[in-house]
Image (tube, rainbow, N blue to C red; front, top):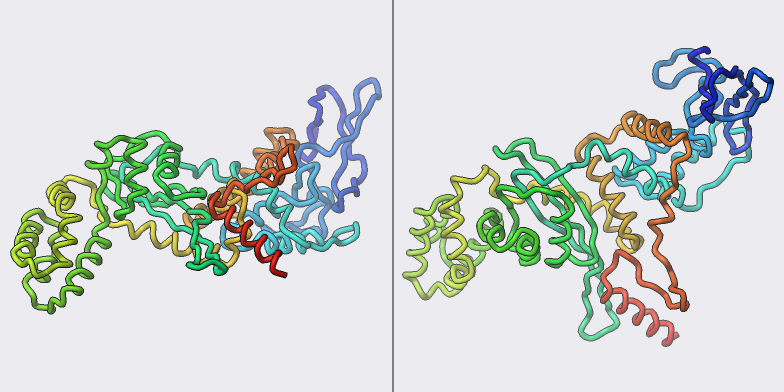
Length: 431
């Protein structure tokens, strides 16, 4: 059998396989094959991954000449090429909307098409690909346990009801983020992202429970939800002894309190505060100076809140990995907010947004290659004989229950959804 001949899709052996014309249904011409038994019985098939007919007769990558039946591969039951699916996933991870990504691959698919051209009106097809193929392309890059050093932070998106007095400002959803380093504070990378209706302690506990292992150090700001999640998942000892509060934020807040006390630049308290977060000796000197000046109300109030923790933190600082700030995770979160904020209300399905966040994580790690995604998708399709179970419907949120009552979506906070419905009813009643 020639290496160019497609193996029988039914696994028949001892048969003869020949080309059997062109399959034109589905919009793209694909090479069809015939499997013939020694008795002359035959069946036609396309194969798990069908070769499309070449349009220009030349490979786009290497510019070598191709025979007509050696075109790019497409799943047997898909119109789009494997590389077009991969390209759409890359575009999504880099900030394209579903509709923009769909229009781009539609334009590519229309080139050389024999059937009637189709227009793109939404990104539904691309959204379905996410459910089917994001777990496939992310598998090789997906962490399997928590790192030695874990840096945590989050962003939230909110909804404001301007029709109430006072205005209601409610949580829509949060994105929890983890950045990881090895035990010497090197090889940092964005570890995990997850959307959740609430950024509370329970959400953080669920997030931390999604991977095995326990870090040696956890760096975060003074977010009570993060500390509560750590305590819920790893216990009170971890919340007290593993957490190192971000020194940048501590410094900014301490400086702000001294500004409120109208301290000039040369004030001894300001001078002692430089380096106070890096050494127990220097911290003690700063604390002694401020405590000896009760007129510094704001600075003393700040010490009341932080002194006990920072006495321990400055003492143990030299024994933890050299990561003392959560700035590494703040920058990607700022980028993601910028990419998502203009369409914040269009995201309502938690599973779908989490798939998008995984693509964005891969893009931030600079591992989002069309070629690499194509290889992973191709291997997955071949392992499932070209017809894997389509999983996109499993991610759908039911719109109504059996009684016909409208259901909540899986992403937004329940309080916000109720308030939004009530606001819509009030607005409808006033018109």
